[in-house]
Length: 293
Image (tube, rainbow, N blue to C red; front, side, top):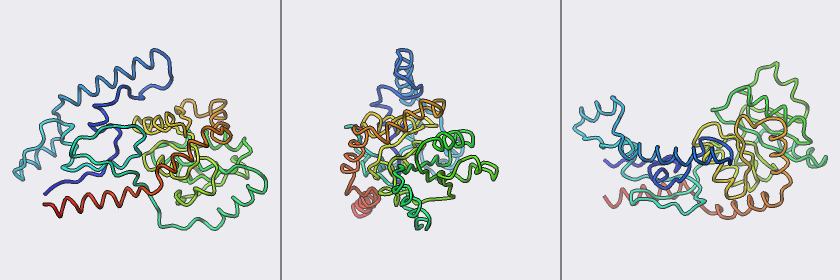
């Protein structure tokens, strides 16, 4: 029975084989460049030869008469691997990989009734609307820090981050910061002017489809890579968690809200992604695999 794996490109074996640098350290200094380049080489060589696998995988394979893949990296592959990522550079894929394009959440929720009203009020007051989300990998400290910085700017904030906040936190955020439990982000594209996000694959894809630039605060290595790809394309500004406050954060906000080059590249990326249905492409590949067996 073939295994189909829908997966991100970041830190897959094709990525590691072609990556000349990994964004483990932030910055552009000589030490940072050397460290990140060396890290890419070491991780690639480790993946090339490592054979360590979880004990449970080996045990279940033995119980079912299956010989597991020799290398660890091969044990993390399927017979068919469908890459659900934005392709911003001409990366090559082996024969058992296929690019299918973005697959991101389209929640079956309507926008809360107050959101269009909040946006309309912001437009009348010429206040840009900023979407702020940090997924499930953030912490209360960084969420509060970014919210307080946003509250000092002439913007209206829509933030589905209530899971990180206590009742005592809301009072200090100001009248233009609106916190929600959950928002269907794919419905906000035409309502917002920019986003501040954590760099998760689906969150970055949703921001790219919106055609609006974003500030990316990568909290984990694959999130930093996702953000860096967009920074290189020109539709995002990347920050480390340590930079997500004060002047660096304010400069990043100013850039995504007012830099014409960033905003033009964000619109260009939306154009490039228009018409790509990653979920349908993945289903088509699965169907072809089944019918050819």
